[in-house]
Structure formats: C-alpha cells, structure tokens
Image 1 (cartoon, helix red, strand yellow):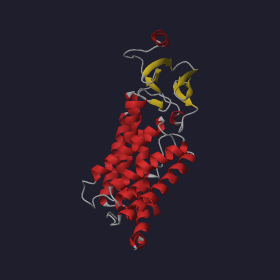
Image 2 (image 1 turned 180 degrees about the vertical axis):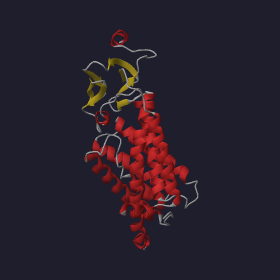
Image 3 (image 1 turned 90 degrees about the vertical axis):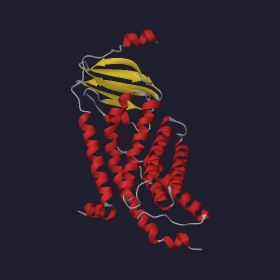
Image 4 (image 1 turned 60 degrees about the horizontal axis):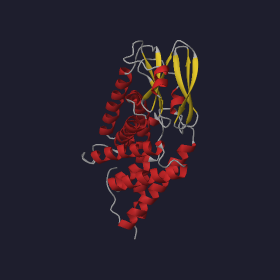
Length: 133
Length: 179
C-alpha cells in the first residue's frame, strides 16, 4: 500500500500511461519470442559459427573467448554457458536455455549460443570450422 | 517537478561536479555489489543525470553521464574495454531519448516517465552496440525483451528516487542560489 501511495505521489498521468504501455509492449515481446524445444546448440564466436552441439547428448566443451576460456555444457536437452572472467557473468547467470531461438551470450567474451530446431538452413559443424581455420 | 534552475555559470558547473561525483560513487558501489539477476542492473547512477536534466538541462545531463562513464571506467580499470563501450552506448541511447523528450510539453511526463523511457533507450543502445560491434550476431536481439523488463523496473525505481532527490534539492534551493 505504501508503495502504491509513493507511486501515486511521484507520477503524473502521463507517467502512468507510459508505464502501462511500455510494460504491455515488453510482455508482448517476451511472449512472441517463446519457441519449441530445441535440438541443437550452435556456438558462435565473433559472429562466426564455431561448433554445433546436439542437445540430446550430455557433454561439456571449452572454447576460447576474448576474456579466456568459456565452458559450454549440455545436459538433459538444455545448454548453458559458463564464463569465468566476464565482469557481470550475464551468460552464466542466464542459466540453461532449451527453446528454439533462445540465446545466451557473454558479450565481452564474444561468445554466443543459440538454440536451433532440427532443420538448420546451413548447419555449421566442428569439422567445417576446423577446415576453414 | 519539471523546471530549470537559473544559476550562474560557476554555480551550474559546481552542481554538475557534485552530481557527477555522486553518480561516480553510485556507479562504483553498484559495481562492487552482487547483481540481482542477469537481466537487472539498478543503474542508480542515472538518477543524478536525470536530476541534472530536470534542473539544468540536456547538456548538463550529457556532461554528468559522460564524465561518470569515463571516471568510473578508469577507476574500475575498464577504460576502452567492451564493458566501457557498452556503457557509453547505453549513455548515448539515454541521452538520445532525453533529447527527444525535450520536445514534449513540459508537464506531460514527470521524473518517473522520463526515467523509464531513458532506461529503455539505455538498454536498447547497449543491445545495439553488442549486436553491431561486439557480438555481431542478430540473435542477441532475442535477449532484448528480458533486458528491457529489467530496465522497465529499474527505470521506475530510479524515477521515484529522482523525484525524491529533486524534492530535497528544491527544498534547499536557497543554498544553491544564495550569493
């Protein structure tokens, strides 16, 4: 109740409309980004596909990011990113992701994981990456 | 609540310096504290930029923001790191939003509405910087709603804090304008 009183005292009608409209827009954006269960996790470094991990096989991989080693873990159809030297650890704290379209990123490391479905447009593979490098 | 102070250039510079110092302290304290979640950063330092915007104008707010980002980044050893550029992009986004909000009628939005829109623009600026320059992958945009949700909440809280700071500042307006 005190919180509502404080909000009523400190906001104008224009503020309240702005709060309501922006809140609804954000909830709409969140709902529109929900997807189906993913099949593969594609790991990108500096926007280049580095490797693809299938989500139905538990595994751990280590890749080299701008700030040091970054561990990618797959378990029970989910995937997560574990970085150690990033200032805010946003990728690690994002936790497990498992739906198509979800991503987890460590921006300072330049590493991004994206969950994809069964049929990729151009499936990047570890082998392809090894040849191209 | 909206209304500029008329101060001599020296007093205006002094107030900008005080607000910048307070913003730097808030930024450093926030960096030292554990975060509340991956999508949420309180951004209390922005309260002082908003106070500068509402009492001294856009240029003063831009000065407080730029000086705060530079000084805090130097103190944290993050100058010209990706974190610094993300901070700067966020600051530019918020300042862009404040520049546009100047075009609105004076009493349409109070500190809370202004803070909310600036916080959303701040986050949008950071995500665009991460997308275009640091990560380079458009997939980062799918995180936008979650980060915006954190910014929505912090924008409102900081707007209320700004209102309370302005109340105190206005109560002691004679100290600022005394000869």
